[in-house]
Length: 272
Ligand SMILES: [Zn+2]
Image (cartoon, rainbow, N blue to C red; front, side):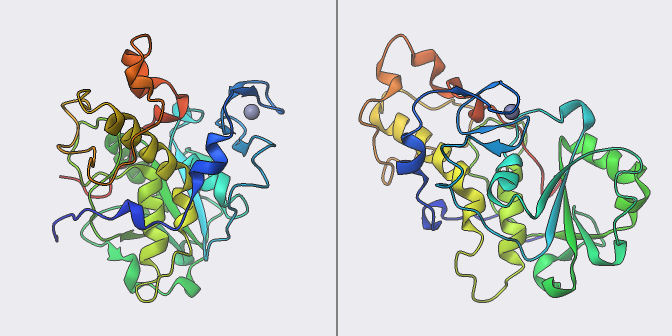
């Protein structure tokens, strides 16, 4: 297995900051009434003020994101894919029969293993859909073992990369956030001539990444959580926030956790 390499998140062709910075307050979701910022985690819909302003893309093959039923409404970067590509992404609650309607011969599962192929070796034209499991490594292993269709699906992998996730993971850096894994699944399906077609999948992720970078760059004496990746904050390239929350003594402790959207889980790509 080649060593995981960092990727350049600043090369993404997305500019979420002007649009999302303009959403200053939380509002009630027009469908379920829950307090939301940019989109509702329960309804998987952007707030109406954003629906025409955020990018919307189509994917070359469909995506099913399988979640553990106990975590169905849990906050996850995986939902970003549903917001950006609503016509092609489904959130599926795991059960023993949740994949019973899938055409196994045209479906691939992003999952490591000795029989996994690189997605770059597959012909995307021949694929109906890809499946990604959003959960812990042990949950995912159990789901793939116990669900007959998941068990039989062709496994695929992506090229190893190190995560740019801000949330501390008790795992090594090659475990990507779910939306990173989804993005690279589509990106690697175009081995030659990729030209930003799926960068929009990283729209919200890039926004939160930049937000944290700029917060910490503005107050260099405030160190990012020491258990995180070393040198996580790129002081050379980060644009310091003009009014950093970290500078306000009342909010210092909350910098990491001020947005529900930052409280996210993670997915693996390669096991240790
Ligand atoms: Zn809602």
